[in-house]
Amino acid sequence: MKQSQIFGHTLRENPKDETSANARLLERGGFIYKNSAGVYTYLPLGWRTLEKIAKIIREEMNAIGGQEMFMSALVEKKYLDATGRWDVPIGFEAKGKNEKTADFVMGWTHEEVLTAVAGRYVNSYKDLPFAAYQVQTKFRNEPRAKSGLLRGREFIMKDLYSFHASEKDLNDFYEKVKAAYFKIFERCDLKAFYTLAAGGVFTASNTHEFQVAAPAGEDIIFICGKCEYAENKEISKLKNGGECPKCGGKVKMEKTIEVGNLFPLGTKYSSAFDLQFTNAIGKKELVIMGSYGIGLGRLMGTVVETHNDEKGIIWPEEIAPFKIHLIEISGGDADIKSRAEKIYRDLVAGGIEVLYDDRDDKTAGEKFADADLLGIPLRAVISKKTLERDSIELKKRSEKEAKLAKISDFSRLKFE
Ligand code: ATP
Ligand code: MG
Picture 1 (cartoon, rainbow, N blue to C red):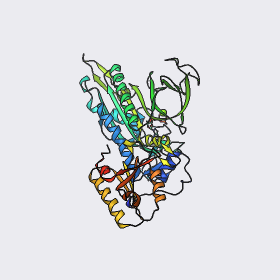
Picture 2 (picture 1 turned 45 degrees about the horizontal axis):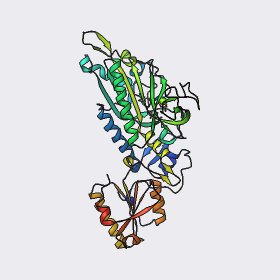
Picture 3 (picture 1 turned 90 degrees about the horizontal axis):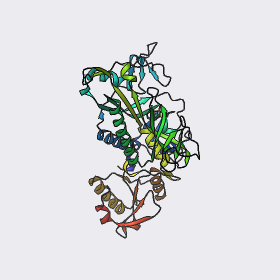
Picture 4 (picture 1 turned 30 degrees about the vertical axis):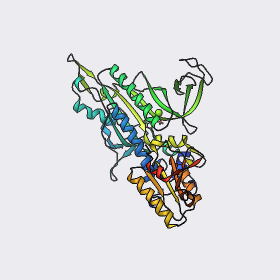
């Protein structure tokens, strides 16, 4: 992609109405555009990263047998009436202009809808277990939508739901989701803590959250410095400086961002929708369910909150919008420009994702500042100076030192 042609560009100043680091850096970099409080547009650059996060999530969900599907955003009242959730204040009601009352809500979660769908296909124990997920936009009238991508009123969520014939089967699958979540967050270079959280409204058992330490976090957890056993403050009896009940290590308090969660749902939804199956001895039983969420935008915002310096973002390799930021410092010199163009074309032909700063109206200083702001993992600079030595100057965004590499070697590099 040529930087001169990209839709959306960097801003000189921080946006005035943004207080959180993720919103400031992502807006200044031209990754996102704020439409309204808690409502964002992903510009091409930001969408590339979001899609990479989605790809990681899909791979890990598919690996544990999750089947991708897609549900409607409009959810009719009858579904939420069945569980008494129609009046939950977080919902945005949806009604036609000329209608007095709303028959729909903009979906803010999909347990009810999917349980109703499952009713058509689940009859016997042989139809179980299964797990289905979607990557879809959710709508919530969040009263505190002020942290950029961390808390949107409209946001993209991966929601996975699982259906089981027994509590044991749910528990086994729950452990698989837990392992998959660890992989997802690791691949995004996030250290996430598996945290015991408030008991489900629906089951006696506890729920779990994946929490990432960050000053911008709205949650507080108590976590053992030694074994990393963690509990959300909402339910914890642990104390800062106290002793870990698991290993005796020292417990500390952390501000954290909840990037994902797991809920054992028991039979709350299956009983509301009478979702039953016939067991092996011909008896009817209620299906046992679980649900598991990850907010993709919140995950992206969390990465920015935890991967930046005073100059800008430092994207982890796997979710960076591009792998290489190629910059030409030609000062209008046609020869330098054409050498840079050739390297750009070679990289593209080699299947390497490269952002090429071909802009003629920017100084070297401006180009470097933008490269730091955008945070692409490897910066590669071609200038008169480097070409005199048949070289290209390479610098990792995460490191201070640059080094020269021969252009012939560089072209042969594999950036996997
Ligand atoms: P929170 O406690 O932060 O309000 P939640 O417990 O209501 O979130 P769920 O409804 O279970 O979260 O949603 C699943 C996941 O979706 C969360 O773990 C989080 O990653 C993400 N998420 C939830 N609310 C938002 C939001 N308003 N904006 C962005 N992401 C969100
Ligand atoms: Mg929560």
